[in-house]
Length: 265
Image (cartoon, rainbow, N blue to C red; front, side):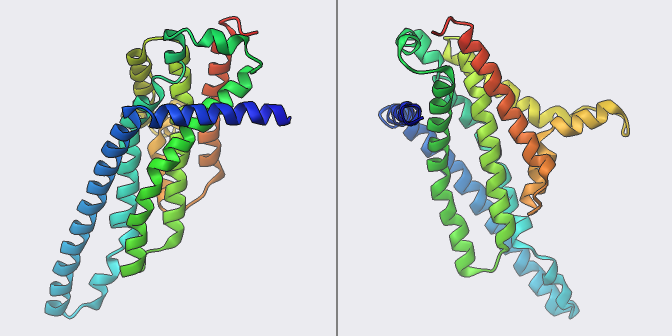
């Protein structure tokens, strides 16, 4: 058991070093923080302008209930977190495209195959390394929320569950990216496959299916938007947690089968 954890930790360190010793980490970090910061700023400006407008209207109509409809969580935080997930739709394929495909291209997968590392340890190390990098990306965005809590009074619950939704989506995306990277040595193909699967999870709810049918229930369950929306509202439903866990587990299992099919010892 101790050796197993040691192997996994060595792989996690290797993955993180590879990210930060190459330009990809800093390019992705710059793109993600720029876009997420812009979406947060734009939402805050829109909220501020609407607040000023309603405040003037309240003074004119003598209706204090107008400002009560202004909700910082719904108008600023939830849209910013959802847009953060949308940015991950493009960022995760860039992060994951080299994970296993690069090992194949450089023929270092043969060294891994003959080393005392099991497929499960390899998967755990690759997954946790990418997951750690995602957490590093998310860490600076907590500053945005800290500013809101300092100057306003948003609800803490929806912020926590919203970040939980972002993390769960990222974990599912990492699992999908690992599978895409395991079936090819071409990084571009791996990135495209990962992007298409993630995009499919977003747009499948646009399919026009009659309500109340079995197909409609399947489409609604597969669509990521509904599951994310509940978490952004501060609602933790076991069905949403099972949804993300199922997707991540499925693609990790497929990745393991793909690795084993290459003749892992």
